Length: 285
Length: 246
Image (cartoon, rainbow over all chains, first blue to last red; front, side, top):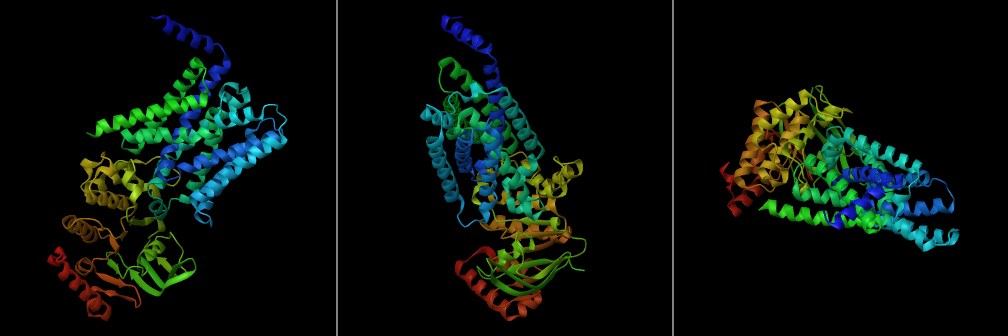
């Protein structure tokens, strides 16, 4: 064993002693798992940008929460994001302003209002530091309080349970909504469910990678798995595994190299995608 | 009692009627072809029959114990379904979704139904293959098997042969005709292909400026029928298509 190997192991063992590192890993795994589950549905329904839009909404909501001095801002951010998700996904069919434009409006609007509020009312001495950490996650995952860890755990378990229970229905609604409606599946209700679950995932994932990078956590596992696997079940399982592996390695690398957690995870996701794309090419031959 | 009867139906969307005074019935074992020019409201009629949109007037009644979730539907394929990662089996079994209610898994009876319909459509060996890697004709058979999982009573087909080559088209028509004759499944089909409509259908619904509904023989005698059929035959003669062979 070389000296470098030994120092890597020593650093990791040293980090493992701190409870916040163990929390970060546990929460990271759970969040990565549930954010990857609905990725396939979002990518295939052409909803990729909704994740992005909602993350900006969550940013705006966090700004409002911090101005209001709420002790646990997730209790405000979560319902606000859920409302916007329902508006975008369910109201989107009837609204006058359609799809892309509506998402762009809501997302840029909340970003602007969020930054404006933070600048006008924040009591913090380091506003740009606050903004940066909300957008890019920085070390947020390593500073979770015990109650936040519990909330994350319960919510992500809930997402996984809902996904497993409604797996076949989500498949039917994603593959062919009209057919599903015609045979009596309540597609509207399931779209609503998907919207709510996405919002929950976005708010959870903000803790891990920050609001600007959430889409990566939702999209990369799904499109990577789709390069290699060809059935819905295989793609779902593979993207869950892909997401967890990337999140764990991202967090470990971030600890070792002292880099920001969120962007490190996304970088690992990108590398993973490149690998899967190559693998897909090779298998296709 | 008819499976489906429509009385004085008015169709349209966004508050604009495009078709008025539509009356027709579909009985068990019927093979109804819906023909008409582009934009005459054929797809709107199908969407209305499927309850995907409400009729603007008149009413649709279902009889003979037919319920709303017993309509099998073969939609036109959308482009993005072509890159959907799903196996043949996964797609066919989603046809059983209407029987499931809130139950999260498929039971033995539904799995047996899936296996039977896969076999009926000659897909048993393809069941683990990826949908997007199949040929156009195979994909249509997958969607037909899915529709059969939803119903044994009525199939609604929206241009089932569009984009298929002549040989596969003939196979597809034969498959649908077999389902109609041997299994007694009522078929409601939108078609542009007059030749097929005239050789397979038992009833014709012609929509457009004037509406005709009746048996195939009545249609041949009617003014719309003669005009439309002549135009189509002229078209066939011009293109030298193989459809004349039928």
